[in-house]
Length: 369
Image (cartoon, rainbow, N blue to C red; front, top):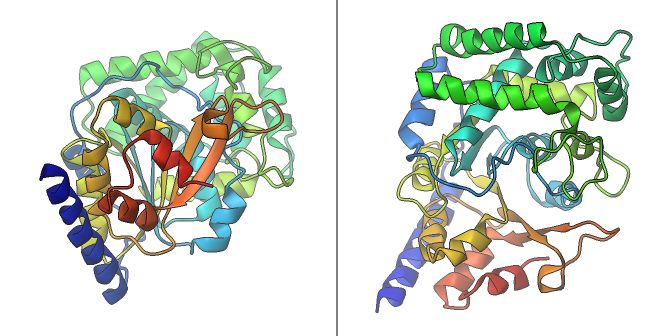
């Protein structure tokens, strides 16, 4: 009976979000004030949760491969929802949403995204951003059309500076707490110092495993993630071009990349995002889940998660992006990669859930392509 009630709830919510989206013209803001931004961060967030890794850098080298398909099917100007650190910036460059919400179980991820926000806003270009991120002097003679590899090479060749680290950390803190007026606690500022200190310590070789390597490790580095492309020669990496970087910079300066602390299967975060989007007659067009769904099935809260997603305003083009690893369910990344990126219709998957066809993570993967 409980499963039938859950499925019925999904059916009603799904019909509501599709109908509502079709009837209203979107009124998404062109920018948020600092007060509005911080209210969303605060009101939507759940308590800090646990994950097995600090996850400073994504570990999915194939993550851009799905962007060409997404661009064919998803119109710009919608709402993006994602998880994890800065790989979201690259997806944002690709699908061009009006606003993005990045929901992660760890408060540390929120703080890292605020660190990025401050550094991006304080930097005129990629070279200055990379120099600040890794506590180095800005390299000279970086041309407008330089590749990400050229920018990061130039930064790597300069020595990290403790003096610059301390100066930049103070600037980050002041930018967030004084320029923007965000109410970060003393403990959060200590965590922010630890996060920024890790980028200082490991440089462009920082990885999911926090190893100091320029490449070739089990886990890709920050450097590796920025020099990838869509498997057809085009890069959407936010460090891939000045145009890409400026697109993220404009959104950060308009407070339109909103980090939220929350469990996908939790009681508030995803529902709050969905309600806010629906109130403005807009649509969640893209939801990047990485492989979080795998953990939700392990924790047996996947039903709560899909019910949360069902409260979001969606349409027939709304897409999940998910990751599988190590050839799971027959999906391989190709070229020796550990990961593969998959997509599926959000509405289609919720319909399968309503019909009782989703009972395992394998069922979710089987509906993906």
